[in-house]
Image 1 (cartoon, rainbow, N blue to C red):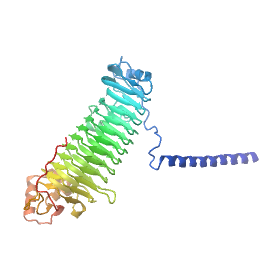
Image 2: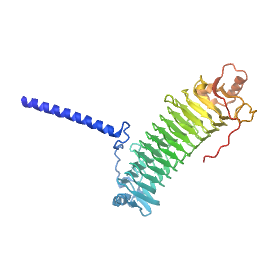
Image 3: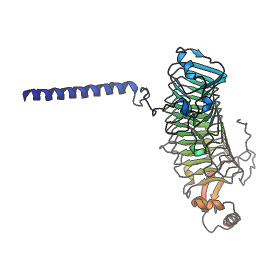
Image 4: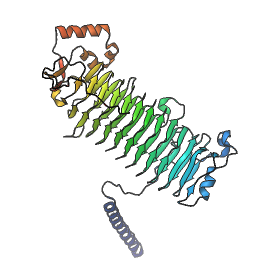
Length: 454
């Protein structure tokens, strides 16, 4: 009995000692990392990649020399310049290495799994063509998986892959001058051309992403997207819980959405061209519960909606600055789906839009947003003193437009002869009080000259 009692006390003491030690370790560990866990060690985040036998891969890779053999023989930190040719994948790189294919090396995984996995930092992958990944979304089959920091991915051609370049927990790296396209699937089941996940302070520059699904940044902060080209995809760039990212001098054509800020703080979209974002969800730049964003000197043309805002700005006492943009020939120049206020529109050009500005519901307080110094091609006024500013304020009212604004199904009849006639009669002799959409106290009388941003 005494033996049992002593044993139980010993076990209890060890348990308490372990708990105390564990608590101390966690406290010390947390204080070293900081509250944001920014310096936390990288952990395994992927499902295990399946292994495929050669017989399971396409016959075109049978007989090719495995590129893995060259990687295994290379010393850490060395430069590997393989002889020109076509090699068999997959390839896994677990040491710092520079691989330079000179534009004459192809690695083909035979339509199974991921082509190349870079699981090291301080590495360079340059001048390769990566092709032939699998088509599984469960295992994120891609051309290039990148893990680690301080890497450079340059002049790589990515094609016939579900996902293109996939960065997870990658910091302080450069992805530059790559050409990326997906497998020839329907838009919704393609993979993302370029994806950042928990990846910060990277430069994404000069890439071409064509016929892919999205370029996305999830939980990724302070990245710069510069001089990229996007065509025929869904989201040109989609930010989700990603703060202080910069989108500058990009060209996005024929995508469903240009740039979308969702649950973000900070960041900017400047000097971009966004064109032909059409279809039921076509939108040049969009916000969803975003705050503190700058939209400046962009060309947003031929889109279903030029700029769309939903519950933005979201944070109290924050604003969204929209200035010196050209919104032209869009279905709706700017649409607000909610009336939080805090949007400041200055020195923009509105021309050729079917509807300049619309609200998702009734605009009961037009002063919530600020308008000043914008050019309106439908301004009806004079400039008698020649100072370039209209003598009277520009006011935009909603008459019969309120029908399709409040009833989305009625948008099918927008610009139809019946609604046009009804709108004319409303303006001629209003039988109901129109809604004031906006008031610009200092509208520009002449359209300002703009420099091409492309």
